Image 1: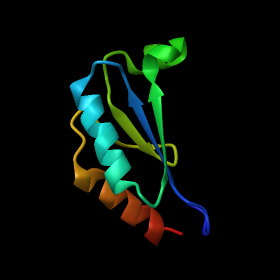
Image 2: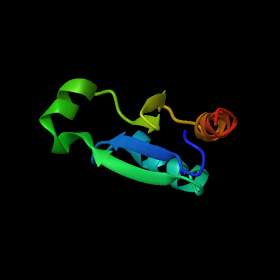
Image 3: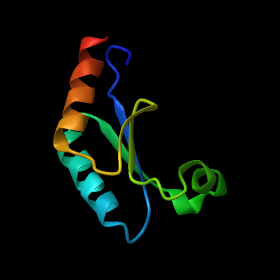
Length: 86
């Protein structure tokens, strides 16, 4: 992550997915100091091919940090590492 730039969290989700809803809530809560985006994988054929049934997937600045069961610590640790790596 470049200095002065907010990290970007992207959560790849699917409608009707309970684990996805939990990951979205965690990303909103843990990512208060980040830009958080949500992407429905079913909206893009390439994402459907790439992810299949493997959702949710959480990325921080383009790097996957968690999939399926997302825990608060996953996002928190990744954000902390990103801050220290500047």
